[in-house]
Amino acid sequence: MPEQVSFELVTPERMVLSEPVDMVVVPGVEGDFGVLPGHSLLISTIRPGTIAVYQGQSVTRRIFVVGGFAEVTPERCTVLADAAIPAEDLDRTAIEAELQVVRGNLPSLRERVARATGTDREQLLIELAALERDERVAQAKLQAVAELAGH
Image (cartoon, rainbow, N blue to C red):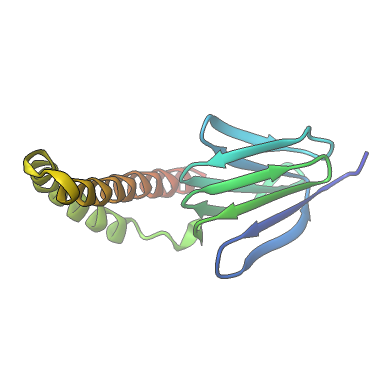
């Protein structure tokens, strides 16, 4: 059995990370999962959250991902993320401001959806889903900042 697992984190723009690691913990939609060498085959959707990369018993990197997919084999863990940000680059003040704007826009958009019909309603529902996703991502970023402050 190999001693490390090959970990790759890829966004649409670039390869963010490609290195052998002792373990990686990924934020799956059904909960975080750890990947060690010899892991069974797995494909999972990932939620907004933090990937923790381990060398030995220590976390060497924390990377916030917006969402995407993870594919795991016994030798490799590949994460295809919508976006990835080093956790230390997350700015609590900017995230709180972003969340305030999103939450300020949600009530009026929900009201417009309730009054709309036909294709206008369909378009507004798409906008509402995107805004609700932005809210979930901002909340996950704040959680990541809080976790980083606690470590």
